[in-house]
Length: 450
Image (cartoon, rainbow, N blue to C red):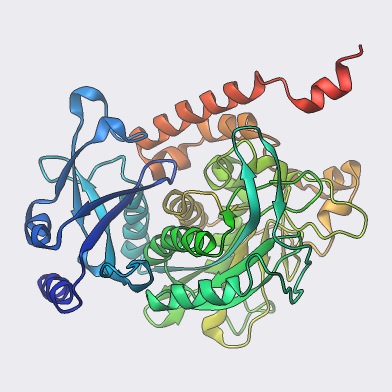
């Protein structure tokens, strides 16, 4: 750690970096930032940066408000594309501590660290590879809620050419790679204006940090292109929403714990129990992986004729089945064995989401959950009676149902810790109350003449 601190301080001087941003997130996953002068960073490494935790969503009550942001030098990264001719900037993620130096129970990064520590105690390292979808809009109208205009009318894998955001993905990928975030794939998604960029797999904490950096970078590149990037789960009634399908794997040292060459499906007992844990606890953790009122418009969608919609609404798993909640992709090399969970949207808090997913999978391993038979059905195309007969349990249908399932979950309470668990429920209950009391344009159109 000391060598890393020395590297950071030396880089600041050699590259004439004028601004160092210290980042962390609140409980809901909103990025927070404080800038420090390079001359102050050495003392920040030793003492941290104090701030008022009561002003941050879910961090502290007024009478216990003092908090400390401690920079993590292993996350140091120069942002060469943000200099604007006045010197380069850099960022580091922070761990949030109490004034006594103990980890804050309200820090989402600490929540994920606890889950990773539990996995490490069993000899596992948890890796994640996210596929992040988002929209590009010409204009947005948050004050009025009017429908935004997409930058193009392209569809899945289309090679689009448009003047407003020409070469956006190329510029975004170059920016991400310049700050050390490796990109595997990028393409146009199903809906007009919708994009997908897939990040290379990494350990879960690094991946969560990368997702937060990704969102910031995408929004910055969009602004320079004269457009707006949005990670809203479902901006349009009749178009698919934006998910964040995540590929998960456990390694024991250099070996993939999910691979078994002797099994008919090449899945180890560990992999099967992990999948079973995801399935059994899916309704309980859905409020975390899909935390907004709007998230459920994506999960429970009504696609137009001939349109693709792969958001999972029911608890099931299958090999190469894109309608299932959990999919086992085909793979070649043993170390590529993984499972893909498809319910997450790209507006989730990645620290909390990956913590509860890991917690559910580990619970399956610890308790020896039995994996139910996989499905080859297009689950969303079945009738309600057919799904009931097949035993496909629905995910919570809205945020209120998801919160009810979460509130009764011992697993989610244990993973999040009492403080985050209680705050999250309280905050989201209020969001649901705010939403359900709104009279919408839909209602006025339909009912004004009653």
